[in-house]
Amino acid sequence: MHRKKILLVDDSPTAILWQRLILEDDKYEILVAGDGEEGVRVAKAERPDLVLLDVVMPRMGGFEALRALRAEPALEGMPILMVTTRGEMDNVMEGYEQGCNEYITKPVDRAELLTKVRSYLHRPEA
Image (cartoon, rainbow, N blue to C red; front, side):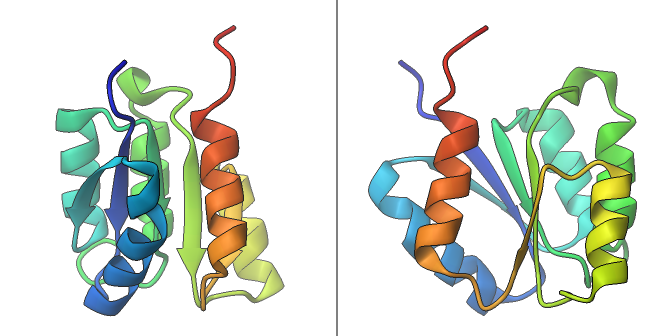
């Protein structure tokens, strides 16, 4: 069985470190991108099983990256979880309208993140 790949897209080294620490016990292969542009490039090349995507980043923000990922036929069905400090209702609605599967606000709760990640990565195959 191959290890599931998770792409972390965030310009904050602290956020990346925290997400890595939360996910490391489950033995996922972790990929990292520092902004939305790099995140889209890595996702196209690596085809991760799941993406954790920040909203506020340089060069290409999270909503723009989300639209780019959702427009990619090869990545259809890939779960994308927004993980951001932007918890205002208009941002949450924008995330869901653009096609995210979940919207998690920072500071990230360990149990919430693990539960949501596991729910997407360990679903029985249809």
